[in-house]
Every structure is written in C-alpha cells, then in structure tokens.
Image (tube, rainbow, N blue to C red; front, side, top):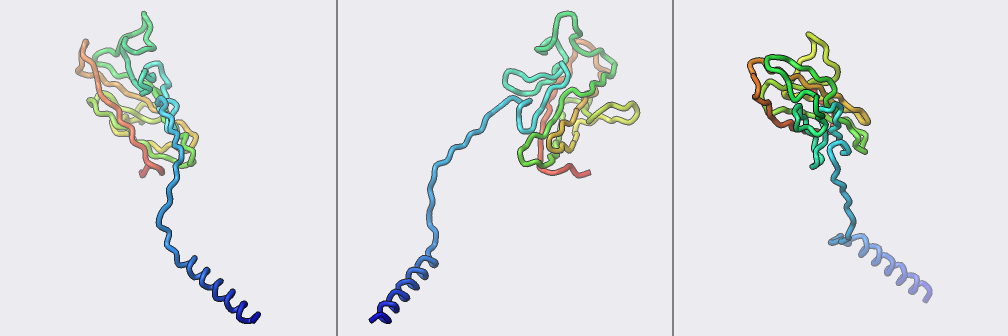
Length: 178
C-alpha cells in the first residue's frame, strides 16, 4: 500500500511539474507613476546655459540670443545692437552641458537657419584659425560644458536692418564622427 501511495504522489508531482512548465504567459497589468519635470533650458538634462548677458532664458524657459534693447538684460546707456559693415566675435555666448544620468557622451548638432552673417564656434576664438559655421557639431562628455561662441559679420548691411534666425539643437548618444 505504501508503494501505491508513493507512486501516486510521484505521478501527481510529475503532473504538476509538467503542467506548470508548459503554461504560456498571457497577460499582466499594473499601474505605475511617471514623473517628468519640464524645466527651463538651463536646468535640463542637456542644458542650454546662457554665459553672456546677450543670451538669456525667456519666460517660456527657452534660450534666446538677443543683441537689442528687447533683451531683458539690457540697461539704459548700453548699446542696442551691432554696427554696420563690421565683424563682432563673442566667446562663450552660451554653453551646452551633458547632465544625463547615464554618463554617456552626446553629439550635439547646432544649426542656424538665418543668413550667413551669424555663425558659431566651439571654445576660444583664435584669429586666423577659428572658423564659424551655421552647422556646428560638438561632442559633450558627461558632466562637461562646451562653450559656444558667435561671429556676427554685418558687411553690406546697414542700419536699421536686423538679423533674425532660429537655432536648432539636436543631440544623439555617442561622440560626434569626425
């Protein structure tokens, strides 16, 4: 009798094991929280940070470059723009930082859609070596800030004309290709 009971227990155990291992998962449901804070450009995981008074964060939290009396940093008695037929070089107008939690480098593309009078460069300006571009790519390592400068060339432009355009920023994970 003990052998028969033992045999039944063994068969029942095998049936349970086979049944449990051949089951297919069909469904799972759960509710979880998602919290995403929308912050101004200078507090993002990839910051666009003003570094000169010509650049600022507007009321919508976006970086603006404005060399006119409309700039919130402008004060009475300061200049209201740039001269005709001249070239201005501004180092460190804004910075691009990489504060992503993953600790990965990013390739940032900075594209200017206005005229060719405004170009951008990375780091310090070196006369005869630094060339501005309306399409700049820079690698930003984790925790670093890349300083972006601006060249304004108003040759052939006279007052009261203005230069207007848009800067687009696009970032991908990884270092920029040379």
